[in-house]
Image (cartoon, rainbow, N blue to C red):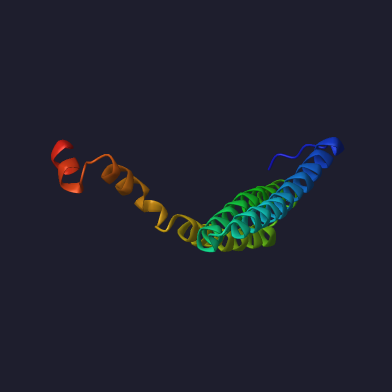
Length: 137
């Protein structure tokens, strides 16, 4: 294992982790606040059903983006600052839970599984599955 005796580098990575965790938290909080404000504006104008749908979508997107920052901070913390087996096991658990949350939120926001994007894009272009199979040898 390569070790570098530089206190400034350790301080840099610790600061990077704090910044990433703050960015994730602020992203979620800011997104929730903006989604709530937009929901209130749209609900007061009349269409509460559409307002609720856009609220869920905006809130879900802010949570997903915030989770990406938090996962990045956990990766740096576990792999660079404290690379022990226990920390790697905790990181694996966190990544699994956050991956499940990301997929679940993505399905809630988009209304379909993430791997259906290619099929849906092909169908939108007018190429059904049979036509695409005939063109591709």
